[in-house]
Image (cartoon, rainbow, N blue to C red; front, side, top):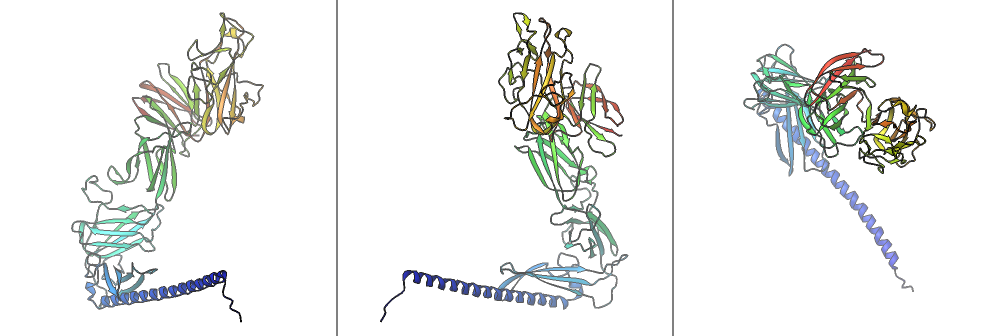
Length: 584
């Protein structure tokens, strides 16, 4: 006879199997219980909706309406009722239908009963819709009517837009309903009154449009005044709404570095009254030079700089700009430190209306000022090297990376000269100066290298000043200096020579200066070095002139294939913009 028992492992396995079976049984039981409960709640809701509809059908026709709605009646729009120990919320929608196009007729009434249960799990609302009619045929009814039509930005109908109507003086009438498949809502049986009804139209994810009271604070002369309803007549009124958009604002310098907390104002072209824009706000980018504006209505917006420390050198897109519905628009301010009396010139293509890059803008006055800039191009320059060598990344505007010992940046502040030894310049040596690394901030294309003075003393010999240019994708890569043909065997010999296209698409650049002389008593000289470039932070059709004297200037704008523009502009204290339109 065997007395063998169960091992511990067998007991654990058996227990686990029993637990699994019990959990599965409980889950099935729980699901069946939930289904039974859901069926019970829905049955109660259907019975409640049917009960409410029977009550309405047995009421006098004139009483079928909402206590504060249209048509007016004795029924509350929302009520809480208890059935079977469960509370249900009953919402009523009652609407006159069958509007005549000429006069207001007594109409049938559409009744919609929605029953909901907030405390019932997984409950779907029960909706019962029906139509009731008066005992007699249609006849002239009481009050007037409104035909509300809602369009989108393209003139198409907006289906399901919410229309909220409220009497202004007493608030005794409030009617909320939605537009049909044609973007229309007919509201029939409206008590008559002059400038009596405030209407607001909207939809989830859409802008809003509304009426305003005549003589109201801040908008005494509204474009769309509160509506008037006349007895037995139809008042037609339309509204425009569309999907919201967003604007992503950034404030940066020419090198794409953020400039935080830049202040500006933005105003839309749409007006809700005489001289009253629908949108007008004072705004500011954050500590990272960014600002996101959500829930923005489609419109044409004008931006104006208001910052105390920085002024605009370019706006992309140019102002004013259009914002389309259901869109995300980037708005970039390229800003520079304030320098009193600044003029920003924006050049626009007369055919496309777009900013025009590559246009030459020349500004002159009778006092000798004469400066030319090219739209769409940025400029980096250095005018002082007295801070000495040893600077890798360009930050101190007076320093550079290295010299070979044969240059002098201290004797004449702001100039590069050959080094004088015992009162003479070495006619057999070349002086070189390698600049620090200029970080453009993003990949760029480069255009021209220039320097001043443009000519040297004849005794220094031919090509006594020359340059080479180097570029890299990384600031730590080796620097290979090249001339205008993209090789190390050539040099930039004439100011404003185009930079080799081999440098395009790079971010970091350096220049290398060479000085030689044929006469021991004469040195060549470089007073400033600059180069032009384009990048994502260079406005496409704008240039800025800063530090101008107040007065009248002549401006000339030219571009190959376009008519030349000439005019006088006045420069006064502060910043101003001059827009120039040229056509092919």
